[in-house]
Image (tube, rainbow, N blue to C red; front, side, top):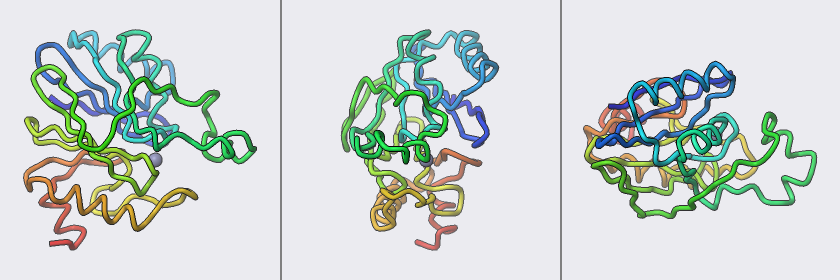
Length: 209
Ligand SMILES: [Zn+2]
């Protein structure tokens, strides 16, 4: 079971994935207001899900508001790439406000992962794929048993992700998209924003077939 919430002014997708055996992951918890946080928490409690990990496709502020809630209330460890840590020269200058307009503190990450690593939760494996472009440490999470991949802001349905940051890279994004589109055709793709699609549909929409 994959359940989507749409949270915060950026209309960010937060996914709860039931991995079986009473265990779950949350991908990109973007719940910001007290009400949104309550909504996520109620859902997890009603479904009696033990949240093992909070998987961050990247550390942009609209994707991480709920990290601490999941840690405090469920003991979930935050997972991200070390390549998404913002360099000190940026965080210490006023420019920080542009990148972290709403965050008081930087997100805390418990587990750093690399390309090709796997996490086992419940009955299923999660394969970590490094898919930089939108940000240097952007990750995708592929769950073969559920035929699902979570790509964050690498892509949106039928279009490439945005490249508006100084550290975004169009070249890396093309490589990353290629890597994702090599997954089995019936794999569902879940984006950071907007509706889901499939590898098959995305290949024809992006004209890469
Ligand atoms: Zn982003």
